[in-house]
Length: 118
Image (cartoon, rainbow, N blue to C red; front, side, top):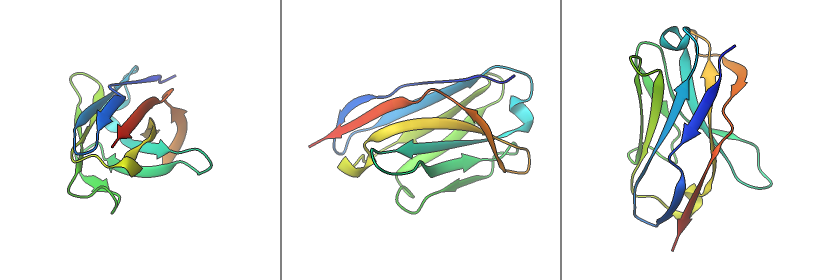
């Protein structure tokens, strides 16, 4: 059973930066895709960025050019570097395990809060 633990959230001013980390237990991390999602109250979780086992990445249009997803298989960790943060980036950020083919699984982390202030 894979477990995911996020960290790195916090309070930041608009225009600032944060880096989120998600550490995975288990041996399947290196062959799995990973995704970062965010959720704001009253809305469904939305995919922010994803990365395949081979390192190919995809980002939502709303964060392209500002957010970067990366992974370090030696540390079983996926990162989300967030720059030029906007008020609308506020939310709870979750990492999610994806299959090698990129399909979502039911394995989520507990979430980490990101609050962007003016």
